[in-house]
Image 1 (tube, one colour):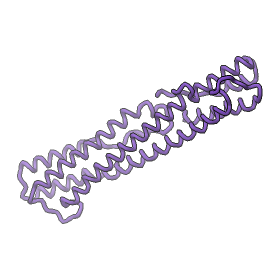
Image 2 (tube, one colour):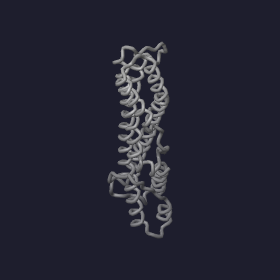
Image 3 (cartoon, rainbow, N blue to C red):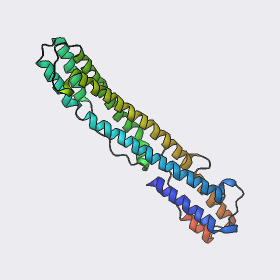
Image 4 (cartoon, rainbow, N blue to C red):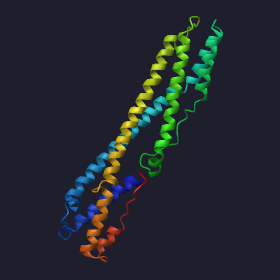
Length: 241
């Protein structure tokens, strides 16, 4: 919960500075209470936007996982219908190859990545990348299977989901779900960058501002002052970005 705690810590810094009244009168605009309050509001807004983007991403990946769960079984059913059809042996081999690639792809959901954890931020790229590639591959393999079925005149199925049209609709759905996840990931990465800038990387970020405030209070009120001692008890954690 490092990001949330940092928000809370910055709020405490502002409270202490506000309580100092006229004793707290920094010359730098960034250290003034009114400016810090504005920065806190922006940081809170960016944090909410990040959480919302993370929720959209989770919903998109969950919807994709649900849709892809039946693809292996569906592919096996298609292969079975081809077997009882008067299909060309070479075409049968192509269909079997596509089915094997679908069944061999690893599309299990990656370990849960908490929205506000430093560890999740450092591992997100490699985990999400391999996760997404697997689903993209399955959609491509399924597309191969559908094209193979489309080219076989003897393929017949009465079950709606096994008809050529039903398979085409599923193919379109798989590609659409992959695009939804990709779009949600872009939004999530953008929200993460904005959050990190305001929280940590900007020269006037929360963490950098809090450090400057502590230095100012120490220089004006002294190392042994009660106010500075209160400031020292407030801690910030800067995760690996």
